[in-house]
Amino acid sequence: MGLGMRISHSFLFIFATLAVIVAVVCGLAMEYAASFLRVNCAEHADVILVLGGGFDDSRYWRAVELMKAGYADRMVLDAEAGGKKYGKSNADLAADFLQSINAENTTVCPVYADSTYGETEDAARCLAPMKASSVLIVTSDYHTRRAFSIFKARLPRYHWSIADAFAPYEDGGPTRMPSDNWWKNRRWAKTILDEWQKVIWWEVVERWKPHRVVEA
Picture 1 (cartoon, rainbow, N blue to C red):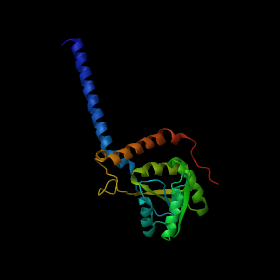
Picture 2 (cartoon, rainbow, N blue to C red):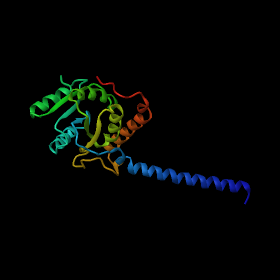
Picture 3 (cartoon, rainbow, N blue to C red):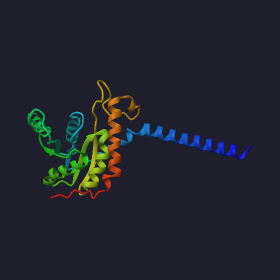
Picture 4 (cartoon, rainbow, N blue to C red):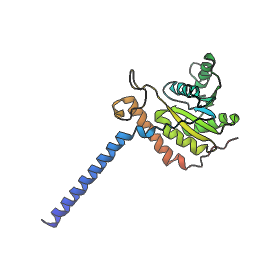
């Protein structure tokens, strides 16, 4: 066998090996892309912080469930204050809703930021008067890992824990983020891929900013 033939066979072997490695990595990424995003480590705390956003009000009702279970006796409900629809912002609607059901020990925190990173500053403003030392975050399951990481980094004075909330992703479908085959549903595929983009942005860009929130 000539030298050229041996080199050709070597390149083919290397190419085939790399192709197998890439296939394995892609397979693992597809398998664990959804489950990796989820963190659920609820602990008893001085206050529950419900993050703004989400598809529906499942975050709030998950927090109510945790309050009834004794995880905390106070709740702060983040709601977007910027922008109005038919004369009211989400913060206005949240306040009206809480009043209509006579919700106790729950306050609305107006949020003006348009990202989880920025929401920490609004949350810090609302938590400060409460003199809390530990906070239990409630947010959607796909959002838990990034939110947990951001709040711990930006507000290190608090002891943080986090609980995940589940929202239906299709009529009659499961109520929690699917750990596998997530790419078979358009809404979840879009949600998970979008969340991964935000996770990468946090880890590569935002994490390295001088990011601690200066509290009053």
